[in-house]
Amino acid sequence: MKSDKLLDDYLKWYKNNTILSNIGEVAVLSTPHTNYIGDRINLYVENLADNSIRISDDGETLNELEMASLDITSETRRVLLNNLLKFNGISLSNEGVLYLEVPRSKFAPAKHKLLEVILQTYDLLFTKRTTVKSLFLEEGLTYLKKHDFGGAAIVRKSGASGIDYGIDYILGGTSKRNETLMKFVNHFTFDDFAKQDFIQRDISKTYIDDINYVVVVNDIENKISSKVKQAAEVSNVKVIEWSDKDHLMAYK
Image (tube, rainbow, N blue to C red; front, side, top):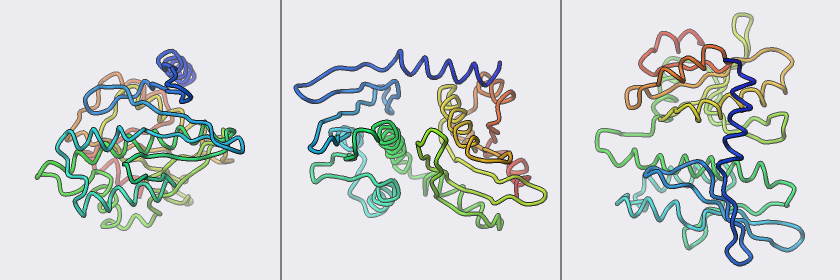
């Protein structure tokens, strides 16, 4: 299976599974991405003055977390949420609405960024379990720091398309290792893999030299399917299982 075919299949799937509708003057994009109970994630687009638009979740994300009995007002979760929003430039209204206001020409990257933040916000559910002291990302970054990987945490990289992406950890290139970009993810379905393959290809086009694009998956909580493993073998996305620390240490 060629990675070009994977990308084409992903883009076709995304287009065919996005539903467009209107509520008055507001355009509703029902994306193929789903929340923790399998419902589609909706984005709401409103026209503003000066050819600008407002893209929001209409408060659905935090409302659904509250319905799941997650106390979003706890100090730890509030800090995690505020840091996530601040890093990505997402605003939070007094009514609990996550939103961005951007020029119409910036719709595509803004939509991508807001959707990415919504998905990461749902990860706050993992802090509900008493056995989990922190999000998987924090656990991964702590491990890298403890073992002196010496990289930079939480940065953004722009792709050739102009879309910028959140990267969890970057290791600079050396004589023995290409520059390495890492993502830590809790869930990794085939659709998630296709998305990361797209991001890797987009970012790689901005480099002269080859890079390593590594996705570290929390396989302790969610096993990686054979379909994903098979696709990864012919992709430039390197998939590492969290239980395989030797493979991760090879990038040090």
